[in-house]
Amino acid sequence: MSVFRAFDHPYFTHALLAGTGIAAAAGLVGYFLVLRAQVFTGDALGHVAFTGALAALALGYDLRLGLFVATVVFAVLIGALGRRGRSDDVAIGSVFAWILGLGAFFLTLYSTRGAAHGTAGVNVLFGSIFGLSAGQARTAALVAAAICAVVALLARPLLFASVDEAVAAARGVPVRTLGLVFLVLVGACAAEATQAVGSLLLLGLLAAPAGAAHRLTARPHHALALSAGLAVAEMWAGLGLSYAAPRLPPSFAILAVATAVYLATLLTVRPRRDHTVTSEEERDDVPTPSRL
Amino acid sequence: MVTTLSLADTYPAWSWNPVTDLRAMWAFPFMVNAFRAGTIVAVLAGVIGWYMVVRRQSFAGHTLAQVSFPGAACATLLGITPVVGYFAFCVGAALVIAAIPRAGQGGSGQEAALTGTVQAFGLACGFLFVTLYKGFLGGINSLLFGSFLGITTTQVTVLAAVAAVTLTTLAVIARPLLFASADPDVAAVRGVPVRVLSVTFLVLLGTATAATSQITGTLLVFALLVMPAATAQQLTARPAAGLAVSVLIGLVVTWTGLIAAYYSPYPIGFYVTTFAFGMYVLARLTRLLAQALARRAPAPARLSGGAA
Image 1 (cartoon, rainbow over the protein chains, first blue to last red):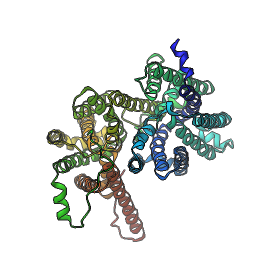
Image 2: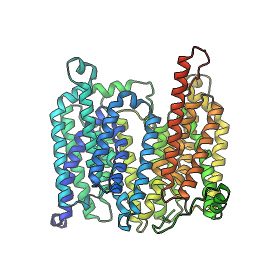
Image 3: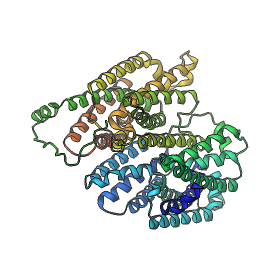
Image 4: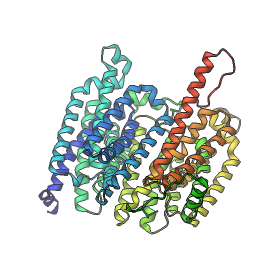
C-alpha cells in the first residue's frame, strides 16, 4: 500500500506529529470560540499572526517568536477592550485591515533581503506543514499538548461561564479572568495553526470541526471531545489526501475535508431547538450588528 | 497583474518638485492607467462603501472580498483575464448571500462558524488554483496585497463601464435605499420594496468589491471600501456630505498611495491602508475632541456625530 509508505518520509511523520497536536488544540479551542460567539476573534488573530510572523522574519528573529508574541499580545488586547471592543465592527475591521497592510510592508522588507525569501509570505499565509523540521514539529506538538491540557483543566468553569455568564459570576467563577485566559489560549492556538494551515486558513480549522460538533450533539463535554476528534481526523485525512495527490497542497486538502464534513452535518442533521444558548439567539429577531 | 517588481529595480528619486515629479511619473503609460483605475475605484468604493457602512453590512463586504481571490486565481488558471474572475465570483457570492437570509450578518456562534468556514475554504480554493497554475506563485502577493503594475487600458475601460453602470443603478435607488437602510420596518410599511433593494445593493456591493480588489488586493479591500466611509461617518451625519467626504478621502488616499508606492519598493496596499487608517484615527480623535469641548462649553450647539 502506497499510503503506508508515507510514513517512510520524515516530512510526513513530522507533519503528522505536529498536525495531530495542532488539530486537537484547534478543535478544543474552536468549540469554545463557537460557543462564546467569538469566531470573529479567530479571524482577527489570523491577520495578526501574518504580520507578527513577517515582522519577526524581517527583523531577523525566529518566525514562531513573532507569531506567538503577536497573537498572544493581541488576544490580551482584545480581552482588555472587552465587550465594548467587540461591538464596533467597522473600527475593528479597519484596525485589522491596517495590520494586514503592515504585514504586506514587512513581507516586502523581508523579501528584498534575498531571492530565497520570496515564498515566506505564501508559507505564512497558506501554511507549509510538509516543510516542518523534526525540531519544529516536536515544539509545535508540545505547545499544542500544553494548550490541550489547559483547556481540559479549564473546561468545566469555562463551559459554565460561556453558557451563562451572569449565573457563573454570581456563583463565584472568575468570569473575566477565565475569558482573558481563554483568549490567550486562542492566541497561542492561532500561532500554532498558522504553522499548519497558514494564517488565512486557520479560521476554517477553528470553526469547521467546532461547528460540526455543535450541530451533532448538545451535550457540552461530548461536543468538546467530538470537536477535537473531528479536527484530528480531518487533519489526518487531509494529510493523507495531499500525500496521495501531490498536486493538492496540504492546507487545501485539510480545509476541503473539514468543510465537507461540516457541510455534511449541516445537510443531514436538523438544527436543534433545545440548546439553551443557540435557541435563545435564534429566536432573537433583532438584527445583530454585523461583525467583520 | 503577474508582473512583480524585480528586487534589483532602482526606484525613482523624489525631487520635491511636484510638477516634475508628476510629469515624470505620468510619462509611463502604466502609471497613467494606474491613476485612472485608482480614481474610478476610489469613487465607486467611496459611494458604495458609505451605503455599506450605513447598512452595517461590512461583514458581507469582507466575505465578498475574500471570494475575489479564488475568482482571480481561477480565471488565471483557466487562461481568462482575472477581471472576469473577480466579477463573476464576487457577484455570484453576492447572490448567494442574498439568497440566504441573514447570511451577510456576522451573527453569532454557529452562523459565524459557517461563514468563517466558507471564507477559509474559499481562500484555500484560491491557493489551490494558484498552486495548480505553476509559475504564478510570485503573483500571489499582488493578488492579495494589491498591485498597480500592468493595468491595461482595456481594464480601465472595463472598470469605467462597470463603475458607470453601478453608480447609475445606485443613483436610481439611492433615496429608497437610504430609507430602507435607516428603518427597514417603516420603509416596508410605506410600500418600499425592501427585499428587492437589499438584493440589488448586495449585487452592487459585489461589483464594487470586485473592482476594489484589483487595486488594493483581496485582503485590503477594507481600506478603500470601509475606512473612507467610516471616516466620513465620524465627521458628518448628512448623507450628501457624507458621500462627498467618503469619495474625497478615497481619492486622496488612492492618489497618495499610488505616488508613495511608485517612489518606494513597498506595496500600494500598505500605503493605502496606512493612509486610510491614519485619516480614520484622526477623524475619531477630532470627534472625541469636539465632543469634549462641547461638553465643557454650555452652548447648545453640539456637534452631533454620524455613526449610530
